[in-house]
Length: 357
Image (cartoon, rainbow, N blue to C red):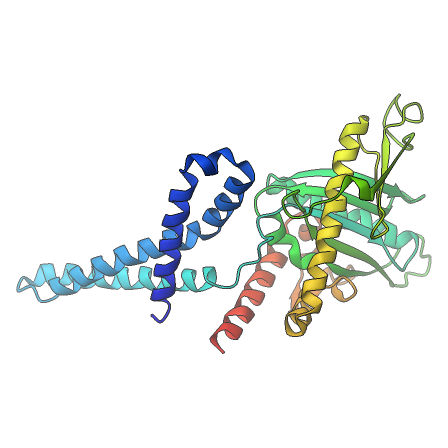
C-alpha cells in the first residue's frame, strides 16, 4: 500500500501526543491539554486500525508459511486461516482509506439547529414543527441532548422559528448535510378540494463553537434583559430573565428566554452567538477556496433545495444524491438512518474519488 508511510507517520505522531499529554506542564495548562487531547483523539481510530492491520499482516505471513506443511490437514487449516485473514485485511484497508480522508474538524461538535417556516404560510409552520420533532426524536434515539434557546409559535400550532442546541457524540458529523431548503408536497387540512400544495422550510445546522474556537470580546457586546413571554410559569412577565445579546462589530443579535435564570439564558445565547460567528469565519475561509466552496454548496448550503417530502406517495427524495425512499412516516418518527447513511456514504465516496485523482 502506498499509504503505509503516511500511516507510520500518524502512528509516530500519536505516540508523541501521548507523551505530551503526560507532561506536568501540559496537564497544568488546560487549554493546551484540551487541544492536544483533541488531536490525539482525532487520530486514535486510524492508529488502532493500522496496528490491527499490522498484526493481521504478521499472522498472514505465518499462515502462508504453513501452507507448505507436509501434513494435509495442517495445510487445509492454514488455507482457511489465510482466506479469513485476507478478508479481514481488506476490510481494515478500506476502513483506513475512509479514515485517511481529510477530516472535518467540526465532526465531533454539537450543533446549533435552526428550523424556520418559509413559503406556504400556516402549512409551512406546521411542517417546520414536524421536521423539528423528527430531529428531536432522532436525537433521543442517539441519546443526544436538545435544548431550545428560542421558539416562535404560529397561530395554528406550528413553528415560525425554533433554535436549539444539540449536544452529544458526533452530532455535527451526522446532521451536517441537513442544511438547506426542505420542501413538502401534501393536501393541507384547510384544503377543501383535495389539491396538493407545496410549502417550504429552511434548516440550518451550524457546529457549536467553544470559547477555544471563537474569542468574543466583552466590550463588543451589548446585553439587554427583558421579561420573558410565552409559556414558563409564574416567572413569566415578572422577572427580567430573558436576554438579548448584540455583537456590535457584526450586528448579529441572539435572544434566549427558555430558562427562568438570566445567567442560564445568557450562557445559551453566548453559545449560539459563538456558533454564528464561527460560521461567518468558516464562510470567509471557504469563499477564498472556490473549488472547496462549490463542493460545500452542493453538500448543504441552506439556500439550495435539498429534499422533498411527498405525502401522497409517502416518498422522500434527496435531490443532491438522487435518493428516493418510501419511508416517510418512519423518517418523520425519527428513523433517519435510511436518509443519513446514504448521504454520508455518497460524500465519502466522492472524497475518495477526488483523493485518488
